[in-house]
Length: 282
Image (cartoon, rainbow, N blue to C red; front, side, top):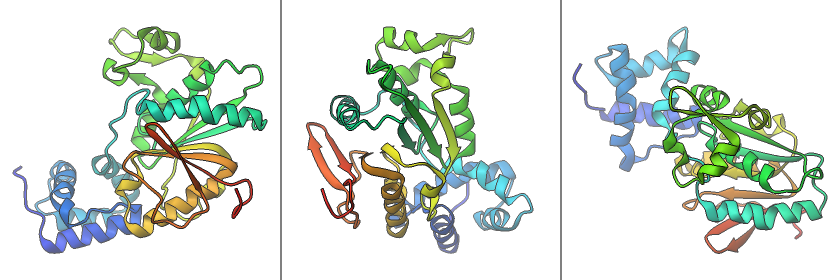
């Protein structure tokens, strides 16, 4: 089936609905990106127009399942282990010692928001294991994402060599075993240290489903949100943090236009935020 154009009306329908449903914003400059991301599902269903796809997603009896199938086409799930190392260095060398000094270990809770196929939460679990703070360090890592299928991949814990680009082979071999299919599978001890749950960060109140988190990584997620969804997500991240907790965002992301009491800290190659122990105070 040949590809088809996304009409003005179809663009309006989808862009408004995606903001309302998921907080995802495809502005006019991303219209062609939206078309190319919708195209595979339209073609799979054999529909002649994007309008037919829209009404299928809105009103089909199995619309929840259909929306779950669409989500992987809308988001970029590209990730790899130990991505953006300066931030990970700040987590290991600055944030963890501070939390240890504050005795925030009952247990230490770390959230990976927008966790994709699990590379980030497993990276954080490896860093915690390598921190040499045991037996004092008890930690729990949780990965959350909008895409239920990518969460299933994360729970499976199997990766190709591409996910380990730049990773020391000795470190990889300490936490992963090679399979007959030339993939690498996470060892049970590390797998058991990480939970995965489906969360839409643009939903108000999502943070109430979790205990207060000492550290949150939410990198390269907020760039996809429209302004209103960004505000909701930022407030949710603030609410999910324990007082004195820390938030890491992606390099292209900032909270400069969002009103929160979070305090920015800058280190070489890394910016992160701290929630005051009492909001309104440092």
